[in-house]
Amino acid sequence: DAKTTQPPSMDCAEGRAANLPCNHSTISGNEYVYWYRQIHSQGPQYIIHGLKNNETNEMASLIITEDRKSSTLILPHATLRDTAVYYCIVRPMDTGRRALTFGSGTRLQVQP
Amino acid sequence: GAGVSQSPSNKVTEKGKDVELRCDPISGHTALYWYRQSLGQGLEFLIYFQGNSAPDKSGLPSDRFSAERTGGSVSTLTIQRTQQEDSAVYLCASSIGRASGANVLTFGAGSRLTVL
Image (cartoon, rainbow over all chains, first blue to last red; front, side, top):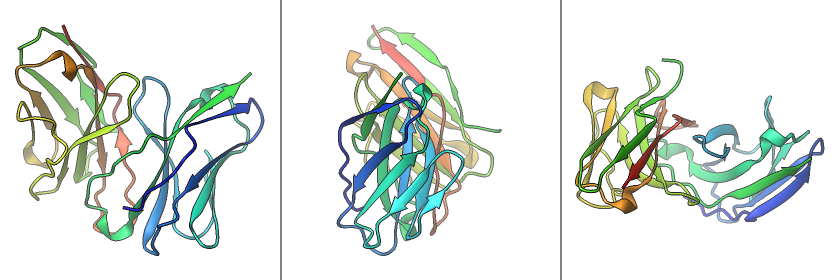
């Protein structure tokens, strides 16, 4: 699986957009970008995934650059409940039947 | 069920005892994963089951750890002769297990193990 690089921590003011970057410069054409988050003392939670196009759901938006070497997860109006560790994971679509490994992620602190 | 269910939610045991942790995945999910998370640390992969295939045990830290999945559904993670360093939250996840395409993992709430 392609390696990802994320900043270890970020702060965001409540009500503002949180933009979490992820670098995956070695990504190949058949690899998805997934985002999960882990709120303190809970199991990780799936947020969103994408291949080439930008994606949006009720939780967040995923912006993937045209060269696919980086992406940004956007939480449009961050709340205190969004304080969590956010994980960016890249994984080939044709190895769905294989273990998924998590890096160290970005610790997002939403400030009141 | 509607989600991944794990039991017990909390387990306190004495060093040297054996423990069993249970995971009940989402119905119809063929893939099941176990992870471990020590206090303040990241997620450590332990073992992965996919349908009837041989499990990927590459993450098990020692031969004291084992897991089985009976009937392609419920899984049990067993830790023998527990040590204090085994104290952690043990997380289970399941997914549909597509051979290709996106596979989204759904996690349980975890089992917190404390070894005294």
